[in-house]
Length: 166
Image (cartoon, rainbow, N blue to C red; front, side):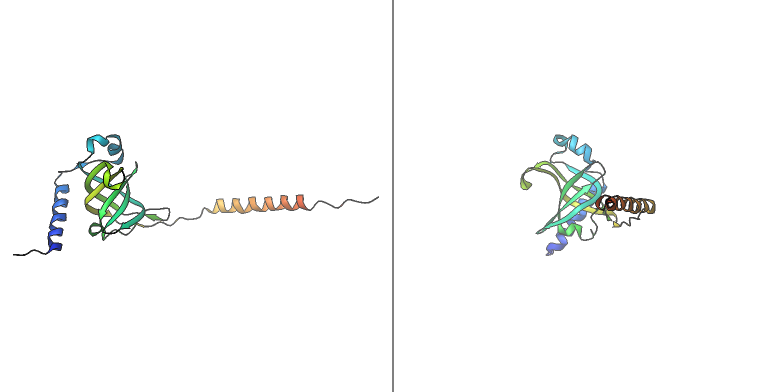
């Protein structure tokens, strides 16, 4: 019996997700990982956080920056794992919250010695969304009033009163 490659890949990813759910990986936050890089180097870790910055596609893989509130860690992900990722956080957007399982590298030779996680499973916990920032009307009034006062002082300085001739 011949198995299609896509089916085999799906089974491998499903197996990785089951390993994460069964607790075979160590759950760690960014500060725990950054403060104990030797301990976690080469280990499978589970890391949760918000996708921030840019989602950078590089061929068959994508760079994500995942921030758990302490720090952001770069995550190298096969494109097949992030088909439902839509939002990356910035001032106007709350990014998708994800749970990543993968190998933690304190100095990844493949990526120039950078600290990163090579993901084997990514699950979206919460979808991101647009953020509406309302204008503080009191601050707006203060800004307009201050600008008018500054303009008045400028006019008074630039156009002095004419001198009277005796």
